[in-house]
Image (tube, rainbow over the protein chains, first blue to last red):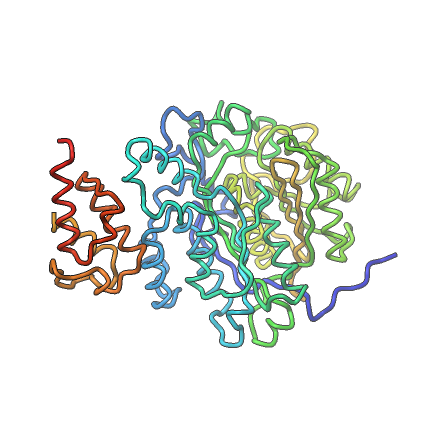
Length: 431
Length: 79
């Protein structure tokens, strides 16, 4: 029996978006870089030499003041002034993440007196956000406990990133973090969707936080061979190559993105610009601690999201793949897509934002949702770069190396995390 | 020593930026919150390489008291 249609009053739309990534700190710059097929991957600038990870999407040089200067009058002066004060003692994660949230807020035409702060929620996607700050703090403590950052116990918490942004934007509704490894972003979007559908909030900011990566984690990912560390250290732009036969592992990146979600009815009532609709979402666990991907869990996540969205597989015309560039992960995702979409899969373009941006971990679901919406709005598919040698088993249309025009009405965006955490979000062009 | 403390006050406490700072002032006079006060003190101790026990610091009422404590424990610090 077909599921009943969604309550039109509680349909959920995207009214604002923001990004701060190594490919661009504004939506237009980000989109232009993606369409041009530009790689964000370089040698790490500040990761210690002993660490086996040498390359990534490095934002260690991010300068908040330079960001504000470049933004010109995009942000209200009072917001910039508050951000300067709040960001001064904030570790790098918050300093990169907060401006993405500010952008999304301003992009949604906010603040708006018709949206009460008490009815405005905030979901922050991600965890272990300040791990390099924690690592550096431990080193200071080992030398001399009295000389640690006195705010360490406050600002090292993931929830500090959540709360400092809520303070900045005066969001006083339900606020919490959502963690699900590399599926965190999609899970955050799903929670935002549920908060709006349940009527707990009138609007919600979903922020995908940047990760401040610590050398022990990076090195451990080398030891378990999850990262690209062998062949491309001298050619970092070639390292992230999802689906290509020479792929070796994922390439970690820093960067953040955020969206403002509202009900369709609420957005229309206040005359907000509707950028896209979040039609549905789903999460499915493989019930394992392993990093190994599982086709069955991925299929359940995609089918669950389509059912939640009341969308048939035949209506999907674009897939933003999880596609991290690991040998096994990409192959399993392709197999899962074949199972969900059947023969039609060969006619659906499937691209990988990570081929250019690398893997933004906690923020991946958000940076990829923003990429999906921008492609939908502008009727252009960005490429999957570094497609040089075809893997015979991976035979879908990956939009290799060149952008191309495409009309996208319904898209899915996948996010799969270590520990068998699978998620999928379904996005539609506004009605 | 006072120069180090003053520089940290100017940088950390919004209301002290550009203000004349005297030894008789308290950081509260410039609108500092409790976390900002802790930050000024900790940063100054680190820069000066002086450790003042936290139990002693709670008795400081103004900058003069803080400077006296820094002087006292500077003398005790290994060179």
